[in-house]
Length: 389
Image 1 (cartoon, rainbow, N blue to C red):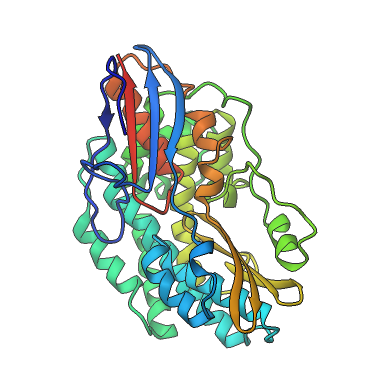
Image 2 (cartoon, one colour):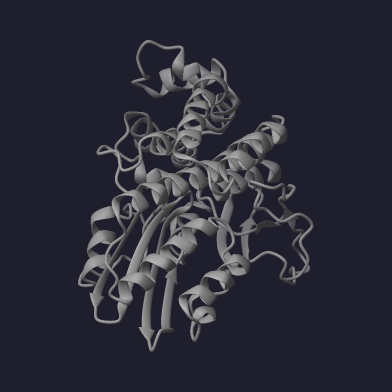
């Protein structure tokens, strides 16, 4: 990627440790599947664009059997490999006219998807977020949970116990200040006070809030991707999905009082960070009680037409969609919509919010761009570049 002669680039840097950290460090030309660029005029970020997006998955699965496609996904899916494999498997089964999975199989699938969701959130929360604000990453703590969460073939009892440990981690280490209070915060001032009282992510939240809120997103805040619309698309295909919407932890927890405080006050990045921590707690609950009535299923599938199967899986990054057409036992057509296709769309949250912050220093502008990108949780390695004076 060429830089204009009058501009000097600055890129984020981080390690690609197992279980998190999807950024690219010292990335060469084309090294990052997702490349983001913003322009700074000395006082604010004035423009932003997506320089490159990940290669589409669907076309690379055409002509394969479902088993061959699943094997191919291991190398091309990026993050959330179990979510991708589950969506493909469910879509192919629906296209083939197979009966829905039995209840015990659905329970096992939900537990495994929840464990993967928790593992990927913890990777970002323990490895990526603290260094953005000068805190130490916790690679050893992350590795301890990462390997246990993703260990194949675990029993129901093991995942139940591990879910309890995750809930304890959230209360004792991530958000200590919020659990010391008798009641949850009702104002932004109370929220900041809770964040400042302790916890790995509490201090990060406090530092993020101290940067101040952004101006309203260009074009207004986007609607959340509604589960009802996804379910209707999966079953019948009659409901078109929006081209621009937000998916991910913020969409899942938009009704939480903790999230509403931040969202209404314009602290959208902080709202996404807080929502990802609530996602960890929900994921742990799903590991203990899959298909719990208060939490919608992470995976669903349907067949809108003969030979066509569709599936959706809610991953750590947002809603993942697969639409498969089978012909003679092979995949004749496959469309895959990843969360990045919404969050980093031409009219998506990143581009609406990337250039609405005043910043007196380049480092501050880059820090907020970095935080925005992390908050939108891309499932592939990425590079953020800031150019300007």
